[in-house]
Length: 191
Image (cartoon, rainbow, N blue to C red; front, side, top):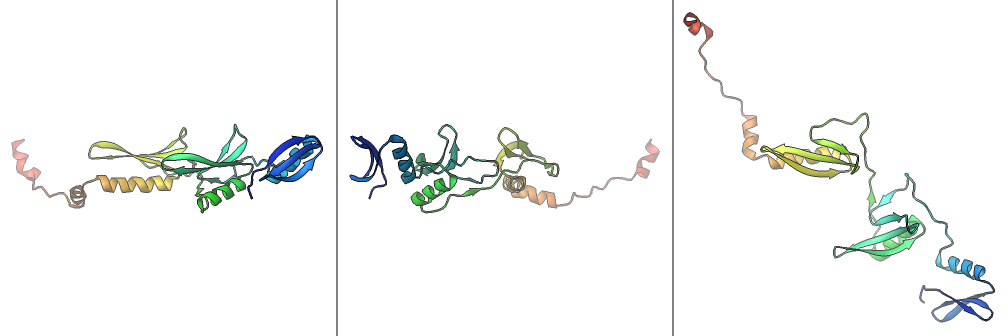
């Protein structure tokens, strides 16, 4: 049976039809609309996002629709799976279409008073991300943007390892050669 319900007006009032069969009859529009909302799940109150609402990849709140939206990326195109009144309904819709739960996105870690200061790792207020830059071989490289400072520091260390040629690693490990300089006493009488 189809999940699609239709509301029609007839001589005695309003009827709700699903796949050609009358589901219910109502004398006025308000009771018919309430029954239709109950059948379609629209009688569930809208769940508005808060700062504590967990965020999932491909599950978004759309303010202009006042609804949660589940999306999927197929062949580099975003397509909408559906719009829902609650985040849980959107997650269920995503699971039904994709066959797996959406990925929970970790919260962004903004800087605090205990933040470590690392050269090349900075916080961007506009992007709400940690920006990593590193200098190697006389050039400045942009490594990327990261949600946490720990990820950013790890990426910077890895980038430095990859960008620095192996022979420079060896030179750092070698000690400077000792230079035999004449002692001051050898030049004392020339002064």
